[in-house]
Amino acid sequence: MTDERPGKDLEIQHEDLRHLLDRLELLLSAPPDTLPSSRTRRVIETEIRALKRVVSHHFAYEEKNGYLGGISKSKPRLSHEAEKLCAQHAEIRGRLESLVAACADPENDIDRIGESARTALDLLRHHERAENALLERILVDETGSPGD
Image 1 (cartoon, one colour):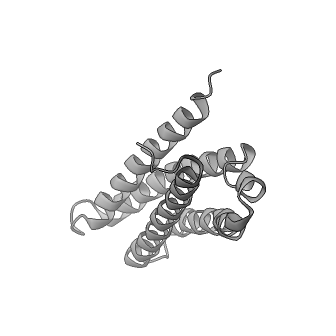
Image 2 (cartoon, rainbow, N blue to C red):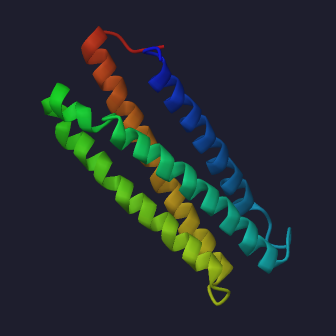
């Protein structure tokens, strides 16, 4: 395994994550009469389950490989920020799990599910941007210039 492999794995994970987020956002912004509501609910549930699976794998990868945890050791001044981002993993996982459960219950209003899904997607996108910004700061610290 080369030194590039972890970075490549992470790059692939981020690409998968972006595709799922984009698909869900398109689905959530579709006109209400695009599909029957029961079908819309199933499609949203399927996409959220896929997102939950990818996010869980992605977060486990970050946690296992010390992606964020290692920052505390190598860059103590950034440890609070890294710990805060790691703590968000549980919150995001929980939101996605709640969304799956909400979709499975036909009594839940599809519009409320959509609002909750949009909120979860916004949180996830914000989280990923914050992680990327933190890593960029570390790269600048180590090399003196932003990465490619």
